Image 1 (cartoon, rainbow, N blue to C red):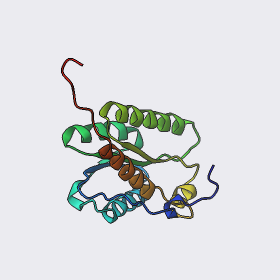
Image 2: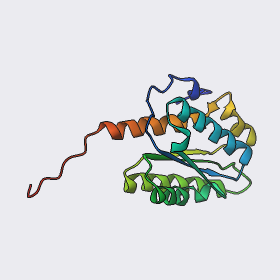
Image 3: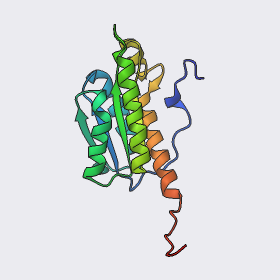
Length: 169
């Protein structure tokens, strides 16, 4: 368990992202927060060597639409991995639980079915203050962490040798 930890300040990602193609779907809901996540992710990818033209960003209305946005993105072009960025702040009802669970399940299924990293970069805070703490505040920027996760998982996939198909065996 991490207690009041800023994971964005941990060991810097040593992955060389040169040649990686990465798609990002960002929610326009809670735009102040999601744009800060996006800025952190893009800066991290570029610092790792991913060229700006190899980062494609698309916007969806809310976090619930992130999984289908990522699927459309994966179907439109060849990406090594994708990142979903959003923020669902707890309100007076339990809507946040349904949305967060649906998005997490959608990204998990998409990762498994596509065979490509689909990174969950959706904040699930109880308040706007907690969201701000996770977009450059005392808990770092979770967009940075999502980008580092994508870089690490793409590098892992590229390091694994895909088996050659053998006829008859």
